[in-house]
Length: 127
Length: 251
Image (cartoon, rainbow over all chains, first blue to last red):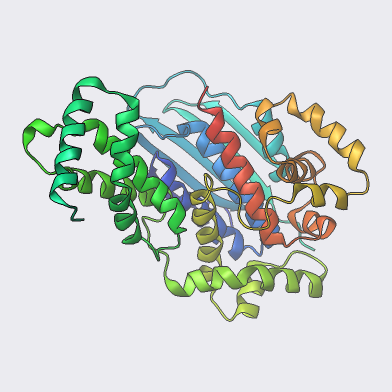
């Protein structure tokens, strides 16, 4: 399975829609046999990165999320497309960095052509 | 919300006075006089999974706004004016807290059982169970399990401002359960440099945050070490993170 199993989700860039972003990730992770702990980690990571895109109160615009499987890992990419301009480059606080390091295997937050974007990769540790 | 005529006249006078003077003592009196209305409306939103106390608090915020914005010269009764403002505040509360999507009763019930299922399975398997395993044990579908995990989260964020859930505030006893108390707390203090907000979290949440994100323990391991359920760890972690985020945006 690779990009042919890609899932796309576009949600308003507002905190109350993040549950959909988490649910989609959890649904795919569950399909891949992720454990309860791993699913919880994934949800924390998605929250952390999405909040870093939209802030606590949300922004006018959308977040476009793409999810796909890579071998034993789930990859999630999110791009913020905002109506209030690109703003400054997003920065992860040291605390966010620390949290993300603990819960996912790879993460990055960058500024892309359409707006700020993130990518995370979470491996499933086959027991 | 009927009240005697003379009391109503008295309030009307106070409103007129307040709309000119903005005197905070008058404001208090006006708010207090109408708390019954706030509570009455809050009750109509009860049974949706939110503690009534929280709802009354939200309704009171709506009431405050209504008192501030009410223009007695327009000839409208205050309760007529305030009701939509308070209801609006309650509705926004539910919307903001992610309950916009109604959580079906079956999922709510599953959420309540989830903690036990996860911990008994973890014990049987000696590792964190997969979602499929949880679903099988709970007699539910995987989707329902995932929804139930989310339901917990929506509720957790909702109760953020509420004083701790029962049994949440015994930070002392938790710290005393940890053998290496001092060393642990000391290293937590180092982490505080990362975010001073960590210091404002209850001690118990600091410890969990530390074990999870700095020591790299899994939620199940923390649960085992602290002798609390995995769901509880998950709930406290989510709450800490929301708090750190929430406060972070205020400055």
